[in-house]
Image 1 (cartoon, rainbow, N blue to C red):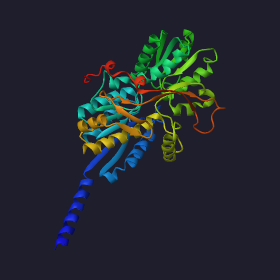
Image 2 (cartoon, rainbow, N blue to C red):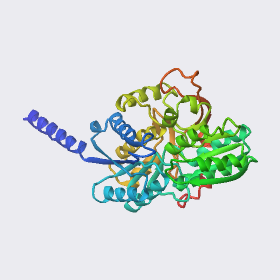
Image 3 (tube, rainbow, N blue to C red):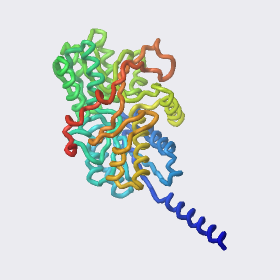
Image 4 (cartoon, helix red, strand yellow):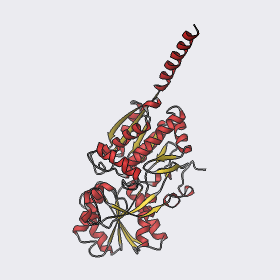
Length: 399
């Protein structure tokens, strides 16, 4: 009799446990460029990275059912807004991740706040996401224009590039990157001679490059990204601009950009990133798994940020016991971050994720030892030097 009661009690406990394990459902939306100039650096690779995070978190064993959906925002803020509203209002999405293109990211951040969901941005650059446009529902994970300006811009000024001319993508990202780099150049005693803004996305940069060449500046700062940067550098090479003595500063250059340019064209470029596949044993091991799942391509820092952001979000969901946005974001900021790609870090009150940044130089063809062996490490920039001080951002809810 006693044994019978014990068995029934054990069965009841098992059934209750099984019910509890299946109670938490999480839907994550990977929203990015899947067909345009940022498709290689985000696109399907970010979806692969998000799936790897779910797998490594072992979500199913922890009773968290995770579904991942994806969509192409075409780098258009209105398209991104429409998709975000549909995901939140009709499709049950709890969290949106990635979203390159700063204008699209700012739009999604506003909608996420309105709907009280969670937005972890990896792909966009504007430092306004944690500054004048900050949101209690948004975490900015991978990089921003402040860190890029101080990394690459600071290094170029230190190397003697005192006068600058900017070639700038004409939207929120380009404007923010030009603004933040100008501040670095002028603070170091340099001078900005002028700038020209090009349509986004662009194809023919010849007239803009000729204006930059005519300025006689030491440095032409490329405040653009992805396909725009690739085409700018290729056309500058065709015009013989660097051969004539002016330096190009690629203020936002991704690994896939260097891959597309080839080392013969990209060699010597100085750039700032928060992740490189060949940094250490852990980044190499993860990146090889990623490459196996993504047609042999190594990950960019944006895709690495998607992995780490999703992983930390799921840890917070587990700790909060559900998907309530306020509780989950509070846990994300309360818990230290720790993953194999960015190491240990934290998320600040304004939503800024803090970790090391790295200054790299692109290798020469002779230095490269194999496929995707593109960077040599110049310097590690610690968090206290990489990121804008909290009190300087102007975030409304920072006390």
